[in-house]
Image (tube, rainbow, N blue to C red):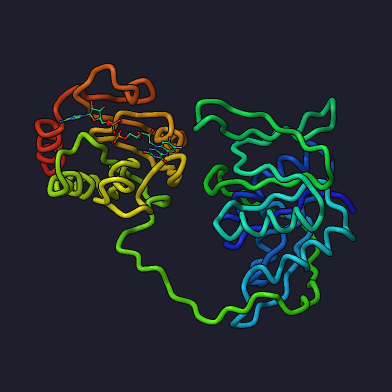
Length: 315
Ligand SMILES: Cc1cc2nc3c(=O)[nH]c(=O)nc-3n(C[C@H](O)[C@H](O)[C@H](O)COP(=O)(O)OP(=O)(O)OC[C@H]3O[C@@H](n4cnc5c(N)ncnc54)[C@H](O)[C@@H]3O)c2cc1C
């Protein structure tokens, strides 16, 4: 049985992959199968949102890592022979995808930003960023199944459709994993998840000193948003934590409004904001590259402009 398989470790990512999986399956005149690792009660919802089949992976024991699913998915794939396997590029998803691809001896295109099925050549064309985000690389795969990982938030969640029907099947338990988890320590998070924020105020090197971050925080607060930053602010100056860095080596955000304060707009940063609905920027250099991608720009010193913006917003 051929088809498009999707796997993600959480509900939101499954819905995003269902959207693109369904679009591809319709063009290929095939089926969508979603593999889920928790909450089997959501199976019917996945069917309404585009799945033709839901494969419920066996529950993991407390000390079993997600990689226990690698042999299960690989074995099932060998039997069912899907055309395509799409996996969400969460940190564990990326690890899982590479190891499943190795077991299947299949090619894997990582970090795909777009997927198109060419009906003439019957080939999946995958697009990913190359040269630090300066170019788009088109990739086709010569092995079967075609495997790809897709960063979170690239696609909108699939919408429900009334009257859809599908099958639900439970997969057998896997053999014990070679890895045993001895202890789980949650990473300390002093910050909110900026990938979910509706408004993001991103701080760049235009800020003179760490104490001045307070100004950007006030602006973010006045806009009901979250603060984020460029790589130098987190990676070199260590003024903000790594998880707040936007861009190629940071996170992708998809807010309604992105506001860059003293951000030059180098391609490695802008790559992370290409899905923002509105991009605005404050920079004292009228030739700063950020103005090329911004919908709104203010040329001025952030130390003059930002207090005025805060005062206006508070009114
Ligand atoms: C492999 C690789 C991966 C990378 N990944 C990332 C990434 O994921 N994210 C990322 O952000 N960067 C990344 N970078 C770094 C990236 O190339 C840039 O160096 C970085 O984005 C620049 O940060 P910036 O805009 O804060 O600083 P700068 O480029 O120094 O820009 C500062 C801006 O502030 C303006 N300014 C200065 N003072 C004021 C003021 N008082 N008022 C208003 N404006 C002012 C200046 O005009 C300037 O435009 C990566 C680089 C490499 C090589």
